[in-house]
Length: 302
Image (cartoon, rainbow, N blue to C red; front, side, top):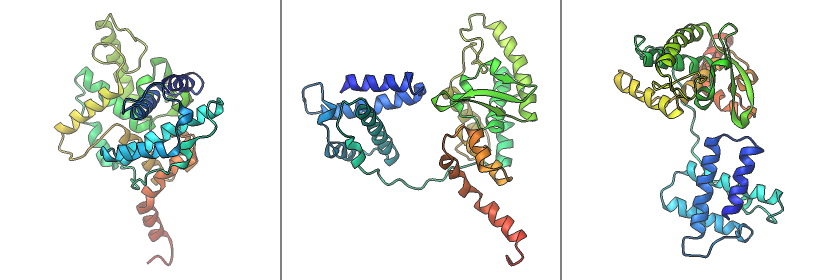
């Protein structure tokens, strides 16, 4: 089993261009499945062709008994399905047993988003008199102005940023390249950050990734986890009783565009969604805006 898992992960990395984060999740989920198959001291290796849908269903039941969230169980099942789809394409199994296993029913969770006032309040939290504050303000402004994934933002280099054209080049899921616009406020804050960034690099002569757009205070590339941790620290110091994570700026970006009349396919391109159905999850968020427009515009609405 483990040799097949390694082949599958190599295929995801070198042929499908999956991100390191996604590959890490696949590896963890599939190794957990392999551990389950050998939990009773069964001899290794397990032949994937011997696994049927009953075994996979038992594994999901095992996860449920261990209090795994339904979303986590669904993700692990998706990993097993993809794994067997790969094995089938390679002729190593005769069928995909995971196709016969039903997904756990997930609650219909709607993406949360921030109001414009909440966004503006959060953007003012970093201290503009410190290197950290100037950097963090630039990060938050760019996240809201562009709708970037945090993983895309931390991978960006200085040469990917065009302040004159107000564009940033990023590589999304599957390493798909796209150009994303941002506005004048973000441009102004980014110019201020780049000035601070040069002085930071001069002080950190040992910086190992000098081209990274966003640097930590040691001169290295800033991580997505650091951005999340810094944002949590700002929220703790503020009077806002909100649970805010970086991805919430992406949700807010999409929702505010939609509420102000942007075309759904345009938003799809900006977000880098491969499928329009992924973008459509934001349409329900605009029902209040749709009702407002209807009631103010339709002659019989009253």
